[in-house]
Image (cartoon, rainbow, N blue to C red; front, side, top):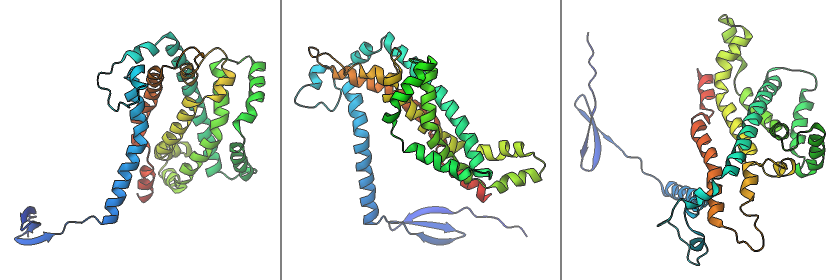
Length: 305
């Protein structure tokens, strides 16, 4: 006996969509959106516009002249604008600050993720004496005000000869970011059942092979999310760099120079906005690269098999 599957066809009849299967016609009801859903959708769009408007205003202002920006009537579209402000701010000092920021950020994120990853595995997978005390200590460290550590940090870096040094600033950034990163990764590691590794070990894998082949790929979203947090903290940090970096400047310190003018010289807001846009571009590129991994759906799918 041969069974042939008839392909359903869709047609419209009397303003309704009808599905025809084996000669039978089945009307399909459209799902109507409730008024509450419409209101929530409109509210979400309004919130998104409010959130994105400062970014748009920054880019828009970067293309306008100082006279246009200081006019009483705001200019919402850069009609007749130019990239002159970008040409003025891209100087050798910018590339020097860019190199310092990139070096500090990459080194800090790499070291931070390494230490946080190993610590989160130890907390989630193993039982050892002092485990609870270690977790509580991580939380208590987050309560310390950063400003209260400036003097101690400065003296420590000065004694080590690491003032105005990429390595010295990276050490301080790692110490500041790694506690919260451990707490973030701990949740992701705990969300992956240990039974997955045990199943791999039953199939002949060693413990290390089971972790690398099974657990590690499932932790990719957590590593990306933690890396994004560490990246933003290191890239945008200002106060610690202001204290430690006396000669070398990071991008936030370089940006500060555009608003730190003398009393006889007005602030060129067009250049300030152009410089702010340039500083924001690496962050946008970074998000575009990693946004596909910033989800925990892979973990949920693995648990369900």
